[in-house]
Image (cartoon, rainbow, N blue to C red; front, side):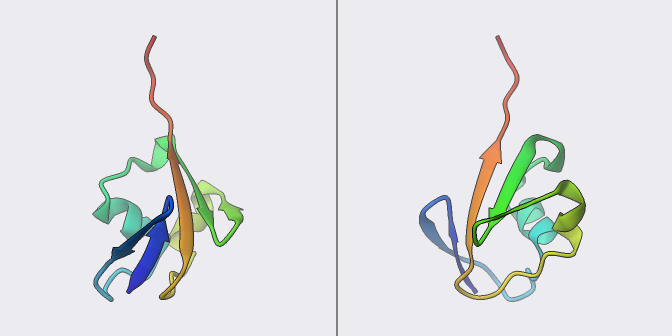
Length: 67
């Protein structure tokens, strides 16, 4: 499956079908991330239910603490 993530085309296995699986594959911590799927911002609760399809576009924003 091909996805565009933050403007970059990436290929994933077909076993990744939901946003939460993608975040795990990318080793992204769910508590510190905002995901936009095809121009719709997802709440953290939506990550388990949001289905990914070939050609989807995602923006993944990480929040990093520090001073």
